[in-house]
Image (tube, rainbow, N blue to C red; front, side, top):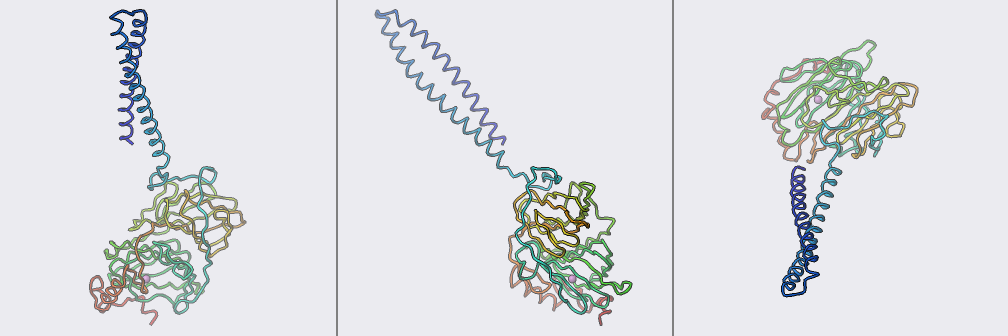
Length: 396
Ligand code: CO
């Protein structure tokens, strides 16, 4: 941009110079014409010669003038084009965060709706899985989304991970967690655990006993790690419900910012690949237009009520995949009960996904290495040797 401004200034200066010369020549020309007309003697020849010279000069000057005008017009055209084609959403700071009433907001559209069918997983656990099934693959960076319902007595005892992040968000009930590094804890309704498995984790995820053996319900999202960060040190980020910030774009909408940004409210969660994770509640008659980073893979998973997403009313337990063009997504609640859903958006990764159970790498060799390292307790799995969790024993 600065370069263009410089070029324009130079051209304008040149133009002024050329115009001044034109003026001088034209003035000289008219003077010589005036002088040359009445003189027809010997000195007249000189006058006529001057007149002829001035004619050539006039032609050159006009040509120069036309040429520089053309260049200026071209430069201005380029500048206008540069301004016009500059993407409106390119960073999280310049992103459009507008309300549903803003008519200039361009909503993304729906490309696919997949209903999450409940199925058995292990002993006593029920899981609604969409992403990670044959219906929904290639949603980089997302590998899997499970809406789980697990009563006490079932669960996920000691198992490894490598190469991904597992994000567990409790909707109702509680889960205990324990790993081979000595990290242990419990997440309850509304709490979040963002685990980066990195080079290796062996852990146990077990439900807590509830009154009347009510199942523990939540969402587990698997996020792929960029190839260069697959073997990073494992890390946990745990936030209690009250520690997760909320945005209130209007009186009918509450957005819990699990990660990313909503209406200027930012989550403290740090991610290795860009991920926005928003838990949205819209009261009947409400609407919101949530801005999203340009070209990120985005889907909505519906929990309660019947939100109208980009003009389409959707039942609970559906994964709604959105197009990548547009400023964000407009969602309304035309129903009589509160609509609750999560909006999840992530930066797509340009890499292969080679998955074998809980190991997610970018090549077959990577999977082979992961299995060998896990079996031989090496390269990140050293502490797996002789370790077993206390909470996992409940399954024995
Ligand atoms: Co796990």
